[in-house]
Amino acid sequence: MAEMTARVSGFFGRMPRWVYVVIALALAIAFPLLEQFGLMQTLWLRLGTRVLVYVLLAVGLNLVLGETGLLHLGYVAFFAVGAYTTAILSSPRFGIQWNFWVIVALAMGLSMLFGFLIAVPTLRLRGDYLAIVTLAFGEITRMTLNNWETLTNGPGGIPGIYPPNIFGWTVDSPLEFFYVLLVAVVIVIYLLGNVKDSRIGRAWNALREDEIAAHHSGVRPMRAKMLAVVMSSGIAGLAGAIFAYYQQFINPTYFLFMQSTIVVCMVVLGGMGSIPGAVLGAVVLDATPEVIRQAFTTWLPGAFGRDFLPGVQSALQTDFDRYRMAIFGLVIVLMVIFRPEGLLPNKLWKREVHEEDPRELEKTHQHLFDFEEGKQDLEV
Image (cartoon, rainbow, N blue to C red; front, side):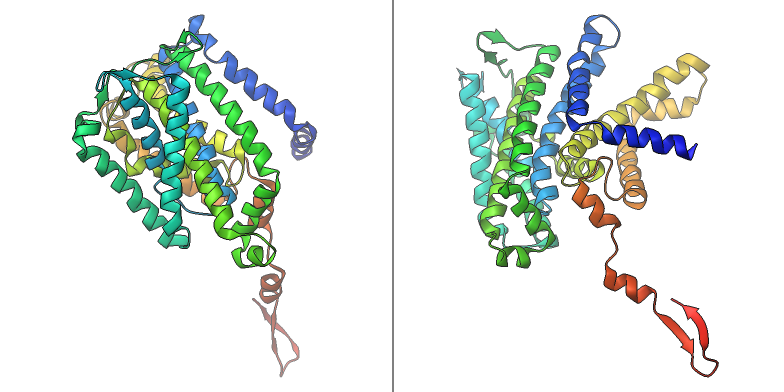
């Protein structure tokens, strides 16, 4: 059995990376067509569209958290900037409807500008201090959106966002938004993959490992960190713009601190520093709760009768959000214990997680001897 497992693992390990990319892309393209042929409910198509929004957010945050090693807990603020830019410039609130491409460019540009303004005073901080400051920035942004009623309509939000018009094609259905988001995800991943393999990507990784050593090797820490934060902010702004078009309504409750936490969990679950890992982490964490809900409220009762675990069914139907966060916590704890490198880890990160420091290894093999008897008594 072990030999067969090793053979299968070796076979998949020898396959070129482009084969996996083609398979994943083919599955993503075919997924919405299942709904068109009546093979799945519209619920799953809407879930797939939301998952793609989280994929954009996860690969964007991976630039900061995975590549550069900066713990950013206010990432949802840039998502909010992109969404509100779209809502203000393409809704009945101000009676205007700007061109889709102009709005997307402005959403990304304003998000990048916010990222730059926040990065200037905060990037000199490290670790917990940086996390606390960015967390505060995210909450300040949400509270500003909640209280600036003349512009954002406060808690009432902005309804009636006009659907985008892309080269004369009005995008107004979940199927069409799915493909728009899929194209955006493919373009972003392609560009980030090239950046990751360039000198810029190596500079980010050097900063993550040892900022002092990277600085003395010729890397300019502030410039490299700034670039990572600004690019990451732009991706979040793009996700926010498309999300606002898709929802046709936004308010500050979409941009709670918990959303930043969920995206961080997606990056950690998939594997920090790994673009495929960030994609898989987003898919697993966003889709798993709905799969669990459907399994216990629809599939299993349909197979075993309506009396199958009625208490679980009612709990998942009425109070599922509370249990969803418990599921998130359990998954992350199990991953940290049994697979700290993530589901699809970056090779360098995986090696670092499992590699032992030779100096520490030597210490653990020190022997304590009983000098009177001249023999080994204890190995620590």
